[in-house]
Amino acid sequence: MIHKHIAFYASNFKHDLSASIVVFLIALPLCLGIALASGAPLFSGLITGLVGGLLVSFLSGSQLCVSGPAAGLTVIVFSAIEKLGSFQGLLVAVILAGIIQLTLGYLRAGIIGAFFPSAVIEGMLAAIGLILIIKQIPHATGYDASYEGDESYMQESAQSSLQELIESISQSISHGSIVISSVALLILISWNLPWFKQQPFLKNIPAALIAVIWGIAYNQYTIHFAPEWAVKAQHLVNLPAIQSPVEFFNYLLFPDFSYLARLDTYTSAITIAIIASLETLLSLEATDKLDPLKRIAPTNRELKAQGIGNIVSGFLGGLPMTAVIVRSAANINAGGKTHLSSFLHGVWLLLSILFVAEYLNTIPLACLSAILLHTGYKLANPSVFKHFYQKGPSQFLPFIITISAILLTDLLLGMAIGMAFGLFFVIKANYQAAITLSKEGSHYLLSFNKDVSFLNKAVLRKFILSIEENSYVTIDTTKAKFIDHDILETIEDFLATTSDDNIYVEFIEIDGYKRFSGIGEKHI
Image 1: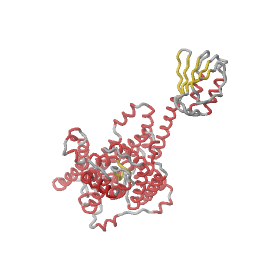
Image 2: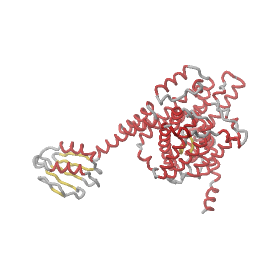
Image 3: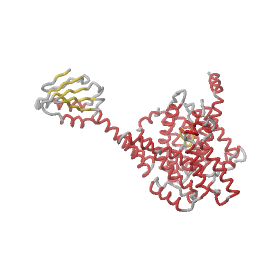
Image 4: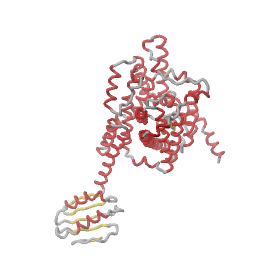
């Protein structure tokens, strides 16, 4: 069996090696950019990428899923750091979130993703996209104040973020940052055009890598030939310059467990665990669909793997992680076949931290902002809004309400509000579809189209009251496997009045129920 596994990995090594390089080139700027958007040390994003690649890749049941810091958690992380007042306090919340995920895995809760309406989940992702766009414009314009620590989400309020956005445009900005981010965005958008995708050479080069190379080249040129257009040092990536592998451990941040005494540590942990688990399960499902071999990864094992990953990431000073669809899709598109591609991308991340940190520090933050702006646009793409609008009010309203609630409150409360509205529409749809009444002349057909609960009692009474005198009523329950006692009582009460109104009632199966009485009753 062991030899079989070794042979399997060996036979696919060539594909996994090339795919791992592509994933690394995409993951590197995203790890840095997500840390930037989260208000966390940039090094923490790389730590999360390392744990996701070197550890979670083999704990996961998915051969192709890539784990690391996720754009969907930036808002939560930023808010948690602000509430707790310390990044080391956040690390405690990340560890607790990992423990919750691990517990969920053992409780076989991997099915929970199926209970969240797609409109609410898509609304959450669109809201995160809008927040990313709002929050990254100050970085993209080089607005100095936002690098001095006041780029908080201001209690997740859309109004305050828009105010900050206006300030970033109207006050001190960096012309160099604007040029870099604008051209980087143009590169990212162009790379998705059909012509670029059709070029064999270009389609294998990550757009994010080209955007970063552009930013570095521009800034190096302007430093020497047009200093007034160069980006200031505080607007560049600032990673510790590690001189030796041993020194790597000196730069790790560790959690401050005194934060276990604070209630908001636990609320942050629960929020991180819920959103990270949902995003992981959604990414896992999407990865399985993209897998050319159509392998299906076990969801409970994935929750356990992510839980262990978050525990380790929290202990080492990293951000919370999820399975991430962008890097997973890139892995598949680049020809990845096994766990090795994700593992090797973690190896390349580690080598880059140990040996080329000084070169990474030449990357302008405006490049990373452009990547996140593009990510935000993809999450909040107008086509998503159009798609849900075309599905009708029952889908569009929960979608748009979730977005509005998240922008006006916070992510967890916004999701709860979205879930409440989503549940309302589900109940409403079930309420209307479970029982139908049709009429042809004096003949009524009362159909039970599915299992009927007490929630349908009101609509049944409404239909019964609309039945006119001197009518013929057929009650068809062939599609209902279960009929609630309250519903049966309502039917029995109706039968007791049929003789007064000269109504003839015919039954087509009532699931073996025989206790009906009434004038004109006929039982088939």
